[in-house]
Length: 138
Image 1 (tube, rainbow, N blue to C red):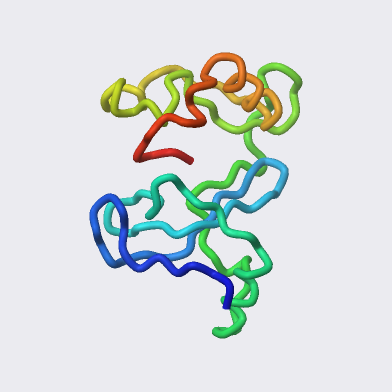
Image 2 (tube, rainbow, N blue to C red):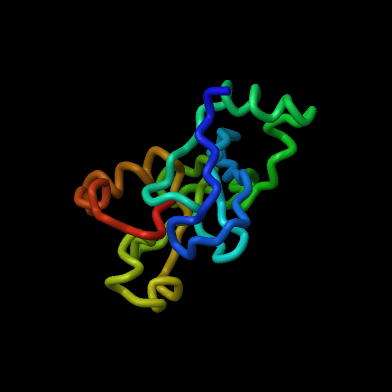
């Protein structure tokens, strides 16, 4: 069918793996396999799935991309701190460095940035983030 079906979580080795999505502020869907046992994306690093093979895969059960439950949706979120476009919540302590910060990373200040300014921030401030070995990248 052209889709890699993940059957075991790479974090907890659980078997309760389902397709889940994130809806970006611009409506773009990011879809991958998610572990409902440990609440992590089931692969490390996360492999976002192409829509066309997913649509074919889901059609076996008369399902569409709209039938995949969303883990997060940024539609209608607060505006970008820089330009006012629809924003996505941004942790100043990057989630990818969760192990280094410990659980306190979640309590660090957040702000809303549009996808462009969010990516720009990472390109300037955290260039190593792209290659950092992490268990919790989004």
